[in-house]
Length: 271
Image (cartoon, rainbow, N blue to C red):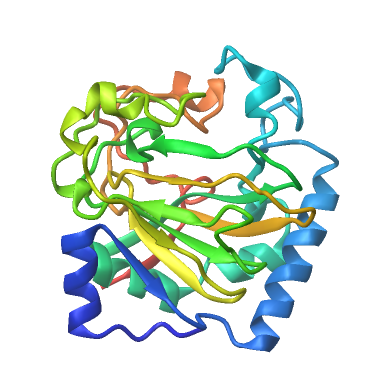
């Protein structure tokens, strides 16, 4: 993995809220990531997340139009918990250090990983924020997005609104069916110029969880596969939002408690 960052890259990330890393994985690593993610997804037999009975294609109760959202992407979370090869990929100290440098924090914990797969002819992913969904509130939280297939203008590459991470809040507009729902909450970005980030397989991007971002529709008959992971700082505390936590986990937490369960949120780097 190409985990060495320049000062300019770190500065760009802080200012723009996203960063493209070309050729993050070498060809051998890309082959391993592809086969491992494929194996992990197959092993799940459709289960979206450990501790949940919801399967791909089922209504999770979050969205009013399940048929539309089920055609945005297939989403499988916390594959690291159910596949040792994916765990090897995710629980990586060098990657954790890279994240810490971009986020400017001392310790990196995994919040959750997820495979995001746009099937042929999939719907677009509307503009949204990540962090407001999560069970902690930290302006520095971020994600990596690794392309397992070429992500192109035609099959649903990512788009970002540069610098939005410095002006958004934890107010959550969700992921709407309409692309412009987020501008009802953040009208100041309605006239902003978006930036498309196509990338070849093996490249990656990082983005702050408060950066406005989305992805286009898949206008092709092929798949657009990506493996992602969201990160939080060591020392993050529970904000009352359930998100990926189980009912049992939430029952043991009160607002302000540390999210430091290594079985759920492993510490992968400490300065």
